[in-house]
Length: 314
Ligand code: NAD
Ligand code: UDP
Ligand code: UDP
Image (cartoon, rainbow, N blue to C red):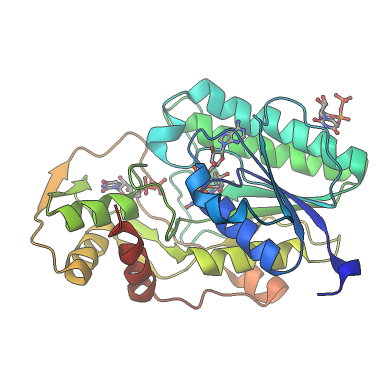
């Protein structure tokens, strides 16, 4: 890429799972990357080999406080994503989504940057519409234990669209469905990392509920490609756009798949289903296919193999 095309790109939450992959892809594409993270769930290990790159900068900063930097694009990913982490300090989770969005939108407005929000399939809550399309308004319990995350993300979407309508800010909202891959936190409690770690250690695989609830799992490389394509769309493309893999599995099928791929002797054990746990989730990605020419290419088995190889190091 020619030097004139080099952009200054801010990635909040850049030391997390998705953020660290995104920082790498942006550097590979020839951009200057500014990673902002408070290291709540992310870590320097995720970005260790980027620290020597002169086009990469790291700032320890909490996005609930104002930030004054000069950039061309902002990917707003800062927010814990796993239920055990976002429920650890729920007030801080809401602050991160809401105050974080206000600060990053204020920054984008001042420097005239395009800003992309990492929203989530959780805005659909425990859905009555299946698969979920972007038109669906969702079914979220506003006072439940997941609300700090779900409602925080919903309010962030509101703020993005009000900055778009009120200030003409170029915005992009991606609704990300369950994504997995290397550099997920091994203890973050999400299902893919839990099952792989349990299988590798020969420990029981913990199925919450009857294991018949479904999720659709997207490999991280596919997801990052979708985010970058969305950022590069013309101003009139705001989203929200679902990004995820539409191939749906039950959680029990996932457990069986992980046991098979790790040749593990682990047995399934059943534990209570957490409150408000969505029963089914599958993205309709027609809009992403039409607008971004994007769809996932990596099959669950291939993605799981790469993820298992990563977790084998722990
Ligand atoms: P993650 O927990 O690995 O990354 C989040 C990052 O944000 C971490 O590095 C964390 O330290 C940082 N962070 C948290 N609060 C912060 C704050 N107040 N100030 C600065 N940094 C802060 O999670 P992830 O899976 O990489 O998720 C990234 C984003 O994508 C999140 O916004 C999440 O809601 C969204 N998302 C992820 C998934 C998924 O399946 N991975 C699905 C839907 C949405
Ligand atoms: N802000 C920031 N960096 C900037 C500009 C603004 O962090 O470069 C924050 C600031 O704290 C402000 C918020 O973004 O409160 C919203 O900014 P906006 O200009 O939309 O509204 P204000 O509250 O300043 O009227
Ligand atoms: N889950 C499970 N065992 C675990 C962790 C999660 O059965 O050890 C289930 C969880 O109840 C949910 C699904 O797997 O139905 C996905 O959970 P995760 O926390 O990864 O993501 P989310 O619920 O936010 O989609």
